[in-house]
Length: 431
Image (cartoon, rainbow, N blue to C red; front, side, top):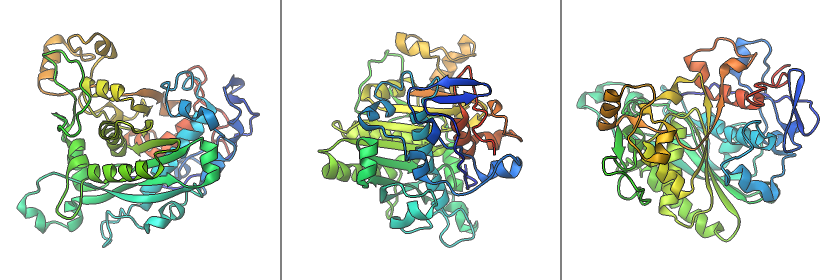
């Protein structure tokens, strides 16, 4: 979904080690609260006079948060145990920091269908992060990424405007941390892969191809002990098509990811390294597929982490098992009021995965459960979940399907969330 851009920063004003929610103070495990910045976007400002707007600066989020030797905890090595409820302030800052990389992808994309450069990156590769306005990151963009639709268009499509039949488009980028101070702060050299959400007509059509399909052989390397009556790892057809489709002039997103990861490992493989893949909406789904692909293709790859915002479901429960077996770490940021996170298909109960028994689809009668499995509509959520809600924010008006899904809303909710018993910081976005 297209992002309305523009964000603001407002220090929380709280003492280190505590996060305020109304009149209560919730203790946290780190002393970085005073650097957690209040973030919202222009859409929020236009709908509520309590919001203001200016450019967000990356270094304002990161200036005092030194991860050092604990960096693997924040990359999910222990599945973020003890960091989500209450939300650890260092983790909050890291989530917001990676959210800015996604915003940079949105800001750099040419959304104007009347433009001759529609669906391309508006800026030269060496200036994308700077000109997108997110501030000095210490990262250098090393590769632009494009996505291609595999939808077969009818012949009459030549008679419609060209923007409606655009097959390949700029989807994001790979950026490698190069700044020595930032590497020291992070505790390793970090490689970010950032994806925007759906933007073109054919991408929307791919989103609607919601039936599950088997992974191709070159993607499925991790065998899962399945029941004989249960299919192997399967993913949404449209997402897989966008990840693997290519043209004569444009390689697939999969090809580009593998080529760049191979180059990065050859260049930096002897030092502490992490791959962090982040995206919003469609970008969150592609981030999950890319993480699975990296761990499948490069067995000795360092830790691969996904930070996803408002992502739809991607695959079935055996796909989830394969992800877990590969060591892929996924943190899904979910707004419970966001419809996109509830589609496609039907979710399989978590208890079924452990027992590997007959699939039980939540809320469905037994006869329909069997039909769902046979027709490949049984999905499973992946990774760890940070569940938020638009309803917990006192500053969000006009809550609807569109605003609940915007990246701006997600960043706002992450910034304000404290814990399940203290949902929102009273000072998080107050001017």
